[in-house]
Amino acid sequence: MGFLDNSGDIILDAVLTDSGRERLARGDGSFKVMKFALGDDEINYTNYNKAAASISKDLEILQTPVLEAFTNNTSLMKSKLITITRTDLLYLPVIKLNGNLGVAKYTTEDVVLVTSDETTTNGMTISDYLNGYDILGGKNLRADQGLDTNATPPTIQLSSDLVETQYIVEMDNRLGALYSSDGTPSPVSFIDDDSIASYFFSRDGIYVKDNLDTTDDGGTQQVIQGPRGTYLDFKIRASQNLRSSTYLFDLLGSTFVIGSTTYKYIDTNIRISGATTGYSLSVPVRFIKQN
Image (cartoon, rainbow, N blue to C red; front, side):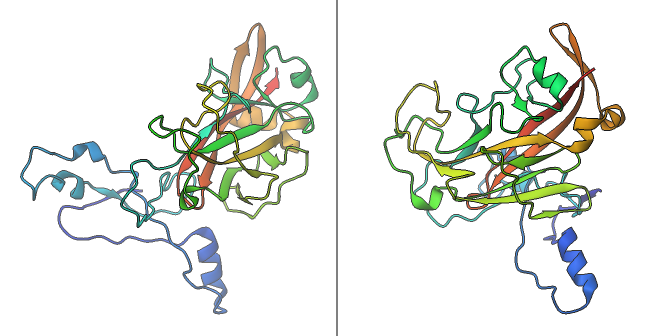
């Protein structure tokens, strides 16, 4: 990985995804470029200089060195660019973790805790965690979508083109899997060579539901202040390896303490992306096992 000089020339540096390279290698004509994504993670827009001459206001931004393209999807393009043709938008929709109606982050470590076996689950002395052992028990993880501003009341209906109808969830398949709130395993769309599983969820009333609550409760239950769209709701189950052994905990993790109890843990991230709006949310997750 490196940076490309962006001092003057227009640079186009593109790579194929793992799936694209696989199809290209087949040589059977199945390879066609159907989708592509653009990102600007390396750009700092605060470098826009309003005091400079009009031709130079964004010069520093335009000359910022850009990352060369690379294929590791866990590191590349955290924020994808989207095109919105409307010119009357003052606010764009976001996705936020709902710690009121779902599970909150464990405040001491700022992560979502997921228990990995029966002993760990039965010994928990806090309530804000996901039961990764008994998938029918415990709480769900919920992410809400909408306009998070008090300039427009939640009683106003969100425009249909700003409502997120599809979500993409990515997580490390070695550590866990996604389930519906009723305990049904979620179908995996594909698993790449980095063991990252991708799940696609559409507005189906099971995983993706319309947020019909239009009350202004001051954040008591709702985390979106303005007009609300949909919300994504699911559970996480620890993998068989985490439930039955400490191998991956010893290989990849460390230990920490809740109260007087020591736990082994592995930290990871679950990325939730809106397929319509392009907004993404990275949720820090900690799988734990009582030491």
